Amino acid sequence: MRWQFIGALIAGLIYGVASGAGIPLILKEVLPRMWVEGPDPVPYGDLILIGVIMVGGMGIRCASEFANMYGMAYCGQRVLEGLRTDTFAHLQKLSLS
Image (cartoon, rainbow, N blue to C red; front, side, top):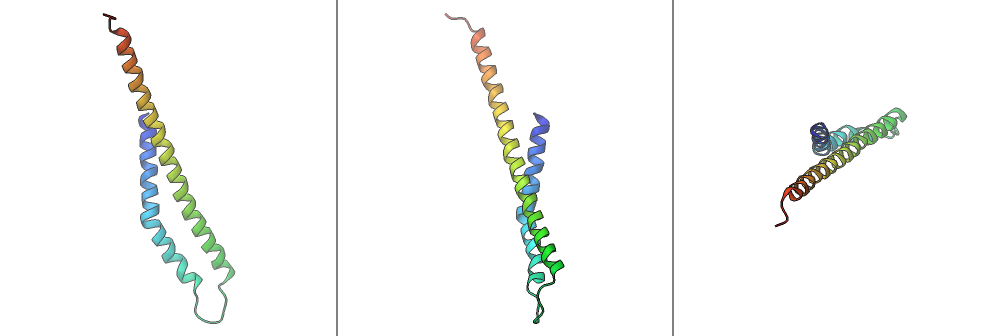
């Protein structure tokens, strides 16, 4: 269970970085490419790059959020299961009187 907890913790850190710093960095990269000055349209290659950056950034954010939530829930359930098992084992050892 230790490695699952460490994995969930790392996923939470990745999610925090992707949410806190990732979104502003994505916007910093994407917005200047979307609004070009002059009558020329945005180049097709830049549009593809904008889509890849946005989908990739949000994909990393969503995957790390899922891994964090799932891992923490899994670890929490295992801790509760251990506590429940230990408590019932102790109760079984006690005398009835």
